[in-house]
Amino acid sequence: MKISPFVFFCTCFLILSQILQAQNKNSTLYAGATKVNITPKEPVYLSGYGGMYSKRITDEVHDSLFCRAVVLKMNEKKVVFISTDLIGSYFYEEVYEALQKNFNLKPEEVFLTAIHTHSAPVYTFLEKDKNTANYRYTQDVIKKIVSAVKSAAAQTYPVTLEIKEGFSPIGINRRALKFDPDMWPWDGGLIKMARNPEGEVNNSVLVLKLGNEAGDFNACMFEYGCHARSQSPASKVITGDFFGIAEQRVEEIQGKGMIAAGFAGASGDVDPIYVLNEIEEAPHWIPETELMGQLLAQEIVRTYRRTKEKITPLSLQSTFKTIYLPSRKEDEFITNDSLPKTPLNITVTSIGELAFVGIGCEVLVEIGNHIKAFSPYKHTFIMTHCNGGAGYLSPKSLYKERGYEVSSSPFGPEAAEAVIKETLQLLYQQKTYLESVEKKR
Image (cartoon, rainbow, N blue to C red; front, side, top):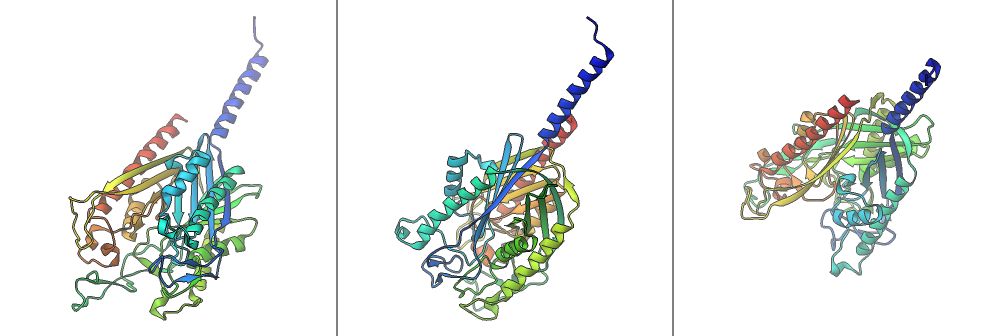
């Protein structure tokens, strides 16, 4: 039986079209995003500066707190990014258990983060706190995080990714040399919390734009490295601080259902340019926080509107790893091998020339800058306070200076180098895999 050239040509064309359609479908990235209000409804103790049973109990709200969830899906793989207007992800295990139960999510598919505001509720699971508003709030906020993820995953859209880096000079290094021999050594050593214009900082704002041609999906994710603690330690006002305000202002300016999810970059030793306890110990709202939030929001919007560099999503790859780091005693500044090692969670996801790095502790800026500089990806998005809250992580070089970040850390001096090495190794492993995928195409 002979086949005519016309039929042969049509058959080949049909097969080729099906192959191309399958390839296009396989390379399509889908996204969903939502936000849920997590502002407490009754008086609570505020986090930071003492926590539970401090004098900071309040029901005064300056700006609402939110949980924002962004879900990315490609082929059979997915990743959930959760940004909460809270102090940290110290309840990671409890939240992950709820997410795993409801959505069967794997550890590498979750980035649970917090913007590190010091003016949000403390959360507690302690039996002695069971009758407190903070205990009830903790149970409620876990349910709301699950609700946010469910809503974001329920409706996803094919999206394109665009990225651009902006700049906002709100952060300043806070490790200042102020040695007082009368206070040595119990105060932590040579370093006090104060402005240090000569110290290391990273005031870049990395903005990732998620959208489509139809305009029915608008979201962005941004990374900025600065402590959200501009209000006075005496303040009794609930607020997301400048960071949470920036998220809301971006959403208001852009409109059209915009979701702006913020993530705290490496900022363990970076404070806002205005830390208001240096001016007055005020229990009321001080407006400089609002100003800094507006300034950061304006830069995010400006950067968002000028994004042009597209990220090509060849594959969605994720890795989760718990590493065990050298520990130290509270009154020692060297590693103590007799102590159990301190666990730390690292999560890495990559899409094309973009990588996300989640680190489960409070990372000093020098460490984040090092990871970004040596990452094999063109853009590396760092999220601290992610999937755990192990404490401050400081470079070894700072241990001789001491200071609050070192004195309060559970880690020995060698820990930071190990984290950098492990993180870069995970990044290079994923990069190698993505390059092999690209070659096969």
